[in-house]
Image (cartoon, rainbow, N blue to C red):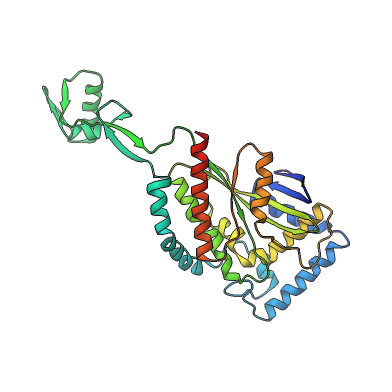
Length: 341
């Protein structure tokens, strides 16, 4: 399929099967196409999942988050993150919880670039700063923007002998890195059956704070979502590019794919069946499981193949675990970055 590529890597006793998708739309098209050609084993599995979903809905379960869905059709048409009322509350808690971490990281690990001024000719000349203390042998006019521009041009062309009492008039960025820093981030989506629906919120919201923190410090971030399962000594994984280095972040897509139980426990389940079918695997009705540190282990295999290192935001279903993931990624990235300089 256009915009995707299929890979298989054998690593000791585990086979890693994965498909890379360049867009969320490409991923959804892949799932829709694959479920139309399911094997004789996997077709009844999808039917069983749909029947189980219907029973869950009839029982008014909270497994799909709050509020519970009213029909399978509602789940199938679910494209917008519906828990934003709860997300706003959780985001405020995460911001408060992360505040002490962020202050420490900002001061000691990765300070935000800031404008500083000097009198040594380093950086760009700031006419606005110099004009505050201009004095002249001839008349200086800065009453209007046009007058100010004419005055500035005359000074730069050497037509007016002008001086300023302000000594530090050259602006430059402190804490700016000498290279173009970047991070390739992988977010492990989904959860095993015992995790309550609303607990999935922490992953996407904490990731949003992490991305904002990095981009404010000039770090370009690529975001990929990992959605997969493990069974029979094999991992089947979708690697979905959610944001390239130069793109802005689509908050709805981030929360929908990583933190929305309605999405994962219906469309995500269909995706696990589709991935297994694509690799000619027979998945059972339990749909395999998310193993502990599955994201770490998978990306470690990718890091051995790719030239650039990826960082993983692993499964996190509480404020504490999400905050620790944010702190760990920023600290590890900064240490790795310094070692490479």
